[in-house]
Image (tube, rainbow, N blue to C red; front, side, top):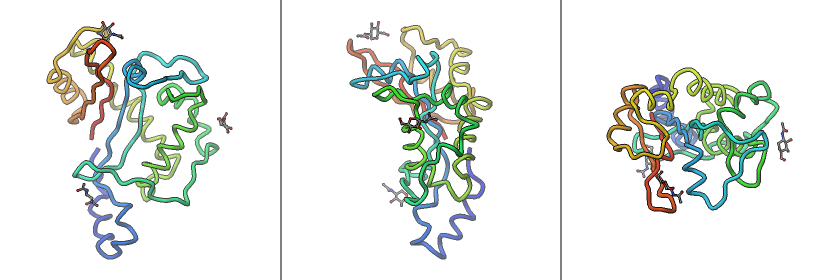
Length: 198
Ligand SMILES: *[C@@H]1O[C@H](CO)[C@@H](O)[C@H](O)[C@H]1NC(C)=O
Ligand SMILES: *[C@@H]1O[C@H](CO)[C@@H](O)[C@H](O)[C@H]1NC(C)=O
Ligand SMILES: *[C@@H]1O[C@H](CO)[C@@H](O)[C@H](O)[C@H]1NC(C)=O
């Protein structure tokens, strides 16, 4: 998902470094989370009003990122979230991008947070609708993380899998190197909770 516009953006930034320093980024991280593990880590976890999410990875966000893995954030305070701009995507977002925050909600707050914090940093190339559409397309058409893991024999069955085998499976199945985060559940077992890749 390397961004070809990158070098153009940087060239522009050399001229107007103060104005666009916070707008430039090198690539996107696409972050997905496993609901079961996420709910184990958090003090509380509430299903969205649309019901319990499927046993599948959900989108966390599409994050413009620098090569040093830090993120620009909140790049345009004037660009608020407008739910009406994505009304045509809402159904797909409820399936693929559910919020597990409490209290139980229609997930709008989560989407707003992702747009304001991360999306506004790629606004020069993706408007709000484009941003959410891009993330949905990756999830729906390019990278089916659950399928990739299952094809490699890695099932969400409570058994333990070697971290390296998870990493290799994702790399082979998606073509991207993942960053993998685990959590530890109440009985001290490590669980795959989030996989992010460039
Ligand atoms: C990471 O890179 C960006 C852009 O080059 C820079 O602004 C930021 O200070 C760097 N962060 C760290 C922790 O080095
Ligand atoms: C989602 O919930 C928020 C906060 O309760 C509300 O303001 C908004 O209108 C709701 N959006 C839809 C599409 O139902
Ligand atoms: C922690 O995870 C292990 C392995 O998946 C499972 O057997 C155990 O029941 C879990 N413990 C709790 C408290 O959820």
